[in-house]
Length: 257
Image (tube, rainbow, N blue to C red; front, side, top):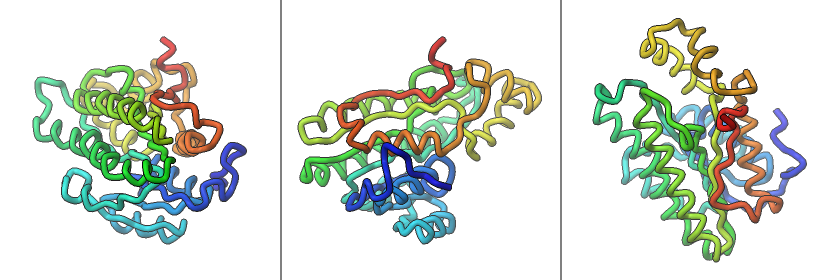
């Protein structure tokens, strides 16, 4: 697949190093491929060793196997990234009054605390170079809530606040920080949600996509991972140097309601 674009031609990021979490599949994989195609050296960070190593070998990157729920593992990640893409995430669907507390805490560690630790560790390098790009893969759920997703919605709202704070602090040092807010993307995470939502709502799986996932979108299709990756790549281009502290919906019109 050609992952380059007019805004980020091949070698546009030559000499830059990108760290992408959750990079072995879905949006993270598409981001890793796009950044490598643009010339960046990519740290392929994922808990799944084999897929991370396969991808890193194919794109000329470096596989970093790490469990982002473990603070010590996060603190051991490379700290020399010019570009950070905080993408790793997980989902759990359950009514709030039945939501497992340990699952809620796990989602916050992976999706809020880990990005905080990664940004905290890499900012000194970015500040030293007077250039850095933080791209946080948030969600439409960072802007809107949905029932049965208390941990995910809480985490994405937290990531939004972290991103904006990083934007304000990073601006004097040439560092931008933004969120991308996709609706439902064609990933394994979303596919797993279909069954869980069907159970939670008491409907068939095909009805989940039609009645729940795409109900609030004007464009009636799932988003492709590369569409998100191309926006992440553009946020690292000169054309986007004045954009920081923003939340950019890629939601087919969901938030237009």
